[in-house]
Length: 431
Image 1 (cartoon, helix red, strand yellow):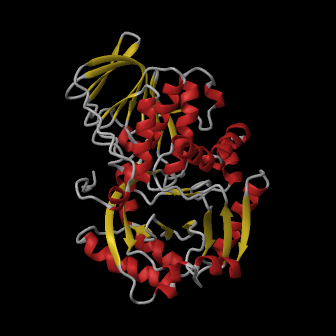
Image 2 (tube, one colour):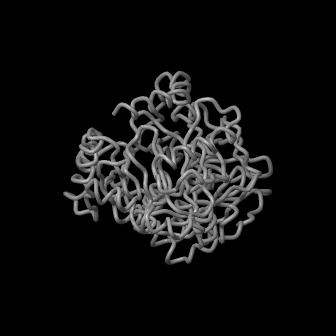
Image 3 (cartoon, helix red, strand yellow):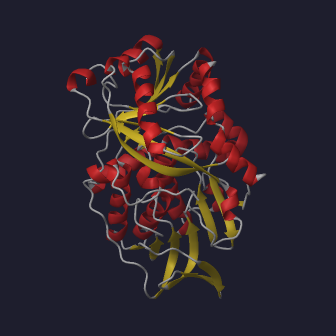
C-alpha cells in the first residue's frame, strides 16, 4: 500500500472548524445489529442513517476519522458520473436499476448539503454548482451528451458556451461545457468529522484505532476481531474502499488503488477573485489528466494531480502545479505561490461504476467511486441504511448486488494505473 503521511497537518486539518471526534478504541466485546468497517464517507453515512432508523450500529475505523481518502481529497461534490453519460449507465445496468442509479447520482448535492445545513456541520460548504469545462472540440461533444442526458431527466443543469465559460473561470483554456447547479465543494475532513458527530448523536458507536484483523461466523451472526476487542453483528458493511487490507481474502484485488496529491496556493487577492473562478464554483475539466479547482475558506485555489514516479513528490509537485495554474489562469501571473501539499489514495475500477458486492451472507462491500466518492458515498450510505433496516429490497438498490468482482490481471492493472499518466497527458495535448 502507498506510504501516506497521516501525521503532518494538511490544509483541511489546519482549517477545519469541526472538532476531532476523538473516539476510543474498541476494548471489549459488544453485540450490535450492524457493524460497519471503515470510518469514511460510506461507513459514516451508512452508520448514521441506520442509527436514525433505530438500528444498533458500531463503526470501526482502523486509524482516525477522515485520516484516509475521505479527509484528504479535493472536496468536490459532483452530481455526475465518472466518465459515463446517463444513457451509458442505463445500458450497463438496465432501465430500472440504471435510472435508479442516475437519480442517486443526481441527488448527491441535495443529500450532502441538506445534511450539512440540518446539523450545522462546520465544513465551509459552498453550493454554487459544479462546472465541467471541455478543453477541445471532441470533449465538447461529449460534454453536450452529458448535459443533454441530465436535462432530459429534469435535472437542474445549464449549458455554458465558450465565451461565458472562459469569462466565469477567468481563463482562455476551454471551448465550453456545462454546470450542474446542485454541486459544490466542502472541507472534506471537516465533513467526515461532522458525520461522525451526528452518527454518535443518533446512537451509533464510533471506534477509532480499531482495525479489523479477522471476520468469523458465529452462529447466524458474524464476529469481528480487532487487537483490543470484538463485535458480533447480524449484518456487516465493509466500507474500506482503497485501504481494504487483508482481513477478507481477495477483496483487495477487486479495486485499483491510485495515489494522488493535492496542493493549494496562498490566498488569492480579492481583485483577482473578481476575474478567476467567479462565484467560487467547483470545477473539474474533461482532460484525462483532470484539472480540478475551487477556493477554500481563505480563498486559496485548491487543485491536485498525480505523479508517475513518487520520489521527491512534494518538491516536484509544487512547481508543476504552479505552471499548470499559470497556464490555466493567466491573470494569476508569475507570482503564483503554491505552498500546501498533501497526498491521498482513491480507488478505481475499469468500468468506473461503484461496487456493492456480497462477500458472504449478510456481509457486503460498498465503495469504489473512481473519483466521485464525496457526495456519492454519502448518498449511497443513506440508501444502504434503508436496505439494512428492511425498508427496501435488494431490487430497489441503485447499484446491483454482485459477487466479489476481481479486476482482471489485477497486478498488471495496478502497475498500468500508476504509470499511464504521461500517456494521458500526451492524449490531452493532442485532443
